[in-house]
Image (cartoon, rainbow, N blue to C red; front, side, top):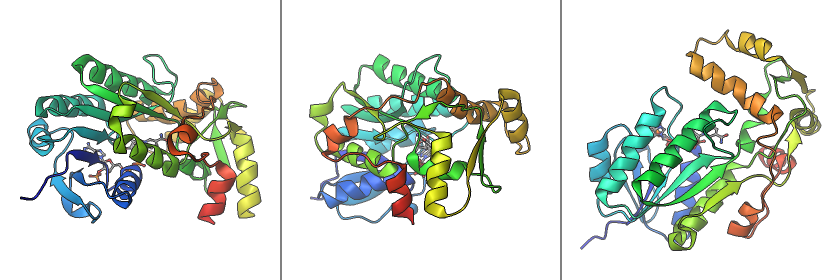
Length: 282
Ligand SMILES: NC(=O)c1ccc[n+]([C@@H]2O[C@H](COP(=O)([O-])OP(=O)(O)OC[C@H]3O[C@@H](n4cnc5c(N)ncnc54)[C@H](OP(=O)(O)O)[C@@H]3O)[C@@H](O)[C@H]2O)c1
């Protein structure tokens, strides 16, 4: 009889979930890759792809029957993302999943400055309310995302001031998640704050990028009004502008500056910082 894996992983077609799935496969751990398009899930030893979507509770419940541990990446940004998260959590409970490992956000709170951090808190709260066992991985902003902040004119623009951010690489989060999923009982009820090794200002980030790329990059502090105005050239719903601008105001407020040793404690390796990330991408 073929044994269906009791560990399920979402997001494997994406950057973070793909790393988690590959790490698990490299450790010889079987997994069910829940994917909206199963044909796009990575082909890995011990992995089977199963169709689902966060918003389709019936399909998600069917995909999760027999699953004990579930890795849930947060969904793509959307007006109804929180509803999708709640529907998927409810599906997990209905299917009898024992433990849910959710990728949340550093400092998630009902009133945190980064607006999407509030949705992460509401998702955490829904998970707590269901009574399912959980582990929360509260990731800071992705370190990988810092070089993408540079505009075509070589300027990082936003109302971040001299605030600091302890951004963390997807590679480090992917290693933490795989370690947690390999031994879920040891992490039941835990909340981990995943940060890089240091907290830097966006001015310091611009200097590092300049040094590594040879291209002159600078940071320009915008007022909040300037930040909304400069982003309105891209058509988007209001909540999206709020999310974009609050990425910077959260840094200015000092809410993303905490440095923890959770990555090293969980993986045995110190997390990489921006200089190392830039070296690795060449
Ligand atoms: N901390 C940060 O700085 C930061 C930055 C950006 C995003 N995030 C959050 O972290 C998540 C993972 O990051 P990533 O870099 O791996 O993103 P990514 O490369 O865009 O991958 C997202 C993954 O989630 C899946 N997904 C998205 N919405 C879904 C839904 N409604 N139902 C089912 N599956 C869904 C995607 O599946 P498909 O292939 O079917 O689309 C894909 O596999 C993102 O989705 C976002 O919520 C965090």
